[in-house]
Length: 176
Image (cartoon, rainbow, N blue to C red):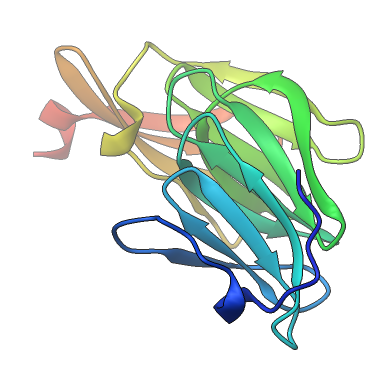
């Protein structure tokens, strides 16, 4: 983590390719180019810079922080704020989603409930390993979630209630 005071447009970088912009709690944003992150205040001042081991994968705004996952099966989860980024002591990659007042993470091997204050992940439902890039998750109005899970030999659509308990699931063959 590097703290800097120069405006972002005055910093010389050698990143080739496109950049992504993530919202930064408290205003401003995080510019992501490959594995490099630069947090920029609303006035253009650089707040901090960091280099990750893997590229960002997905993110979710959660209270006063941005929860971000990175590529790879066991990349760390990060919490980003205006003062820096903090690595969770949890090795998971996945798609975070807000389900009611909870944060869930759909990972290649299961569905987890995240506790952003304690920086922990509780396994709600074990899933057969999959290629995570082929799936997604959405929150449902009743507090549950719906996810399509593709695994070797089958694909399933799984509905969870607000407690993380499976309500129903249908295999690809049952869906027609």
